[in-house]
Image (cartoon, rainbow over all chains, first blue to last red; front, top):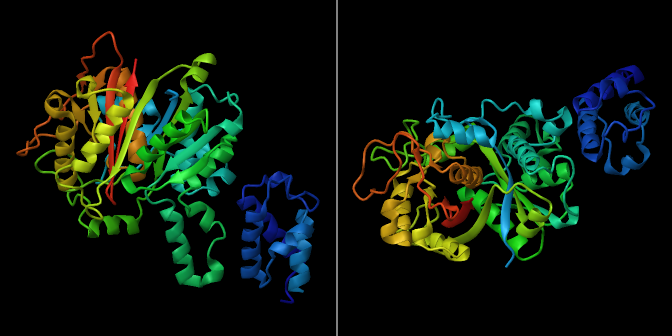
Length: 81
Length: 399
């Protein structure tokens, strides 16, 4: 998984959140998941996408530390690294 | 016992989006059946729901949400709930639930393994999702649950909602049914048990009938306790006067040929409403177009209403839209109320050939005015019967 880059993950996460119904203009690293109306079911879907693409999962127990879009990107990059 | 009035109604059917669209098009003799199925081709989910709302709901819930929005708007609830949300319930029926979601999940499982099964599978396919979705959307916090009884589910939901208000568990209930099972699996499964019409023609009570035509859609009613509705100045569309329900305990799918269970349900609904056979002005039949149902139902109507049965117009909404399974009872309750309000018996489309013993007035060809005594309300019955031997009759009236 050495090819995983933050830029790539950011693109993947942004695309996923948009597909979940979040407003594309509002999706930034600093945007909170709450403000984007992204909830636990969306995170389960995001985890599935991350697992398929990078081989890493986000678990239910991660939810507490995932407050922003940046948190999601960083955790995926960290685990894939 | 508290009285319960109908203050709002909505429907999405193969005849289009809207309760009045259903009523007016059916009354005019239009059919929503094309290619042997009653699909809601005019229904585009994203015209009514945001991207997020649409992907958080199986099609059966989407149909219910849109019918529900219409019902609440027609009740004047669109600018705020008139009662404490804790006192408003939501009871929705479905025959099958989210079969499209279930099938998609199964396809993903077979193709790519357990990791590929969508996390939204369970909340979308669960049969109570219709009630849950409406509750969430409109902040309904009273008794909220789904009802499952095959093709009687929509009517069972409405009957259950009636009791919730009568007994004081709620002051209002948003109730009905929805179904979206036009999928290859459901088609094949119904066809394999010879329930579907091989010719793709829905002609209830006609001698040539050969099975039902599958349809999809939703119907939703807003029920309110009468005094509370009057106090808030609600427009009263009709009254849910009575509810009767029985089980055949006869066969898993076939109705009791003598129509005893259906007749008992009709009798109970009339008794519940305080009416007798002579008071009934119109019967909206279950009328599926299957050989067994239409014969057994004719027997049931005769058994319950005696000689009066021969004088009452009896028509089947399924002749125009097909069989909406768990949504049928709800959509047909909506159709019945509008027929009673407009004093018209819509036709049983396609009825041309009589069969021995099937000799009620099935309103062939064209709609006909209902003759109602000027002093009282128009009184109708809506029958719903489901696989499993579930029988429901609703007694509805409109001023």
